[in-house]
Image (cartoon, rainbow, N blue to C red):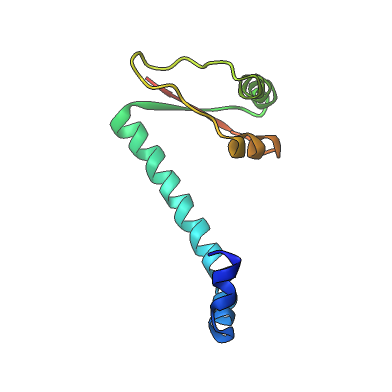
Length: 108
C-alpha cells in the first residue's frame, strides 16, 4: 500500500493494522521457513537435487569462491537448453550485507 492509500484509511483501521504488524511478521517468517523446507524436500525427492552442507572449515573458502562468482558475474554451468539466469541487484545487496549460504545445491 502506498502512502496516499494509507492516509485515506480511517485512524482506527490504521491502528488495527499497526497492532497486527508484529504478529504478521512472525507468521510470515514461519510460513516462509516452512515453504523453503518443503521446496528443498521436493527438490531432493522429485528432482534429484543433492544438498551439500559445508563444514565450518569449508565455509570461508566456499564463500570466497561464491562471492567472486557472484560479484564478477562469472557464468555457472547450467543444463543444456535452459534459459540464462538473471541475477538481481536486490539479491546482490542482500549477499553483500552478509547473508551467507551454508549449503550448496546441485542436481545429481
